[in-house]
Length: 411
Image 1: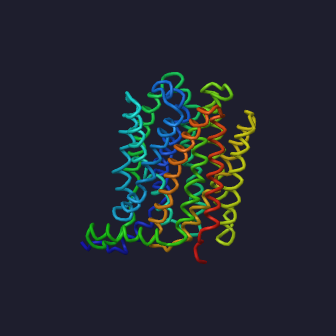
Image 2: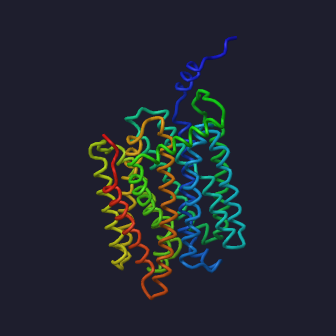
């Protein structure tokens, strides 16, 4: 019997419906969203159990994103060389290890290590979705499908709103990590059963492929427009995640006297609203001619909202600002479309990896920086939360300035 040709295998692969596979990948992405926002509902209990300062709390929350972001280039290389399925199946179990380690942590250092392991396990979670969409869908559908994935994947934040707040309040923050470990195990099983890789032609030894991939990253980073893209990408999503994933719970509990479950209800509302932005902006994508102006305008509007929340000492202002930020943060899907249009197709996977790396290292930096600034402000008698929110606003402004001032991709 004659073996199938590469062309025949590719044709058969294209015949497989992509949506079940994408659904399994989205499940992993949903869990990564849950892990990265869990700290907001656990912050008060963690501070009490481990006697943490605001700076240490920022370090704890940032450890996940630092590990997540630092490994994006390696994950992009792994996806290019070994495929989406094998890369994700090999790495994602670390989320379970990290969650279990966090659940039984006896010290702050062990808890930080658990965060880092969870960040490592989740590192390919969104990247595999974007690469899958690039390979399985037409280019003109990229923004719309990516927006839908961001919206659906954002449902992971619903888990770390009221449900997690209730678990933490009724049982403990450690039980919350045990629940996340169980859900991660189920997601891994779904990926194992449903996901298949696109056949890839052999291009030499693994060493040669890795060398070629690293050269591709080098050429990517040498392009003059890369710096501006990453500079802005490092602060946009970071602003929303620093609010929803770190400061929203403490703000509501400490500044306005909300109970943990009540703050969880607010986080649930914010998370639900955030689901609608990416699909909408994905469909409203104005195209390459106007996309960058939209990105700059919405970034500056976000900065204004953070500044207003800092200085308007009102629970209503915080609630309104948080909900509005959650919705308009959907414009960030336009940044992925901008990245896709800025690089040749052979660099798409690595370009997405580099952008995602900058985005999540930016979250780690912003959460650490806001924690440090909040601690310094509190030590000098200033409002720690106002200082944290103003820091976010200033970082957004700096990112927008870099995006405008640095070279843009050639048309």
